Length: 262
Image 1 (cartoon, rainbow, N blue to C red):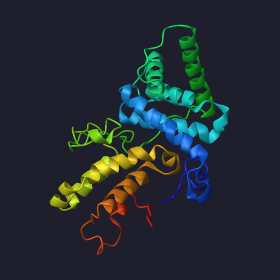
Image 2 (image 1 turned 90 degrees about the horizontal axis):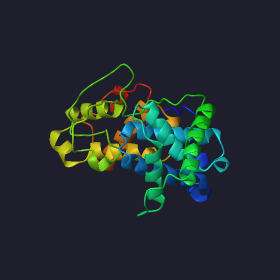
Image 3 (image 1 turned 60 degrees about the vertical axis):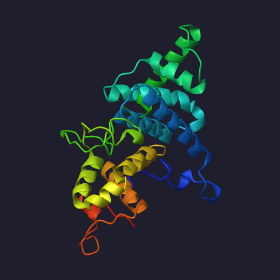
Image 4 (image 1 turned 135 degrees about the horizontal axis):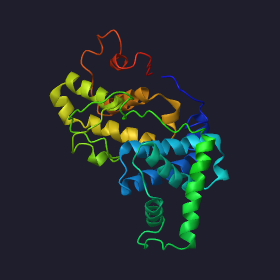
């Protein structure tokens, strides 16, 4: 599996400190992207805008030192910008109130006073800064996003519209990206009882969601990440793809010819 960018951008060896532990910056990014995910869910955002917000956040801090700007302000602006990019527009007032409740549970919504307007202006100005730093390149291909020019409606029992694995097996999805295409193919390929016994699809979806805590989304292609999370889910439950031992090539190369998994 070939990386698209340097390891220092998004969780390579540079993200590891002494004894293989996550470096302090990696821990900060983990906490802040967790905030993006939880705030996005509370704001009613779908999975693609939340994934875009996480990617914008990581990409920004690939260009800028972490100490230069408040990461939580960048996160709030990432949510605001991602809503525009993915056409799920958010009001700055809602972002501010949800964020305030996140940091101060049980608090009342902020009054429309000077503090509120200063924070609103900071979010908007930070958004403009991020666009300049990222050279207005803020559209991304995600493993669970429909590739440009394609559309599909497939009922699979998975709802990928919400960035929450607990909701995955409840409703049919109205979008179909790499991850869903591959899961549907494997479901038809594997033994029916084996598939029903093991939550491979839910686990793959949870792994994909968790991958946005780091910068894998910037280092690898979307289809490679989709294959990797499915491969890990199959390994976690000891599920074997039929006839894999006799096959000329691994199952994942049916989907992505240039993918190599050690």
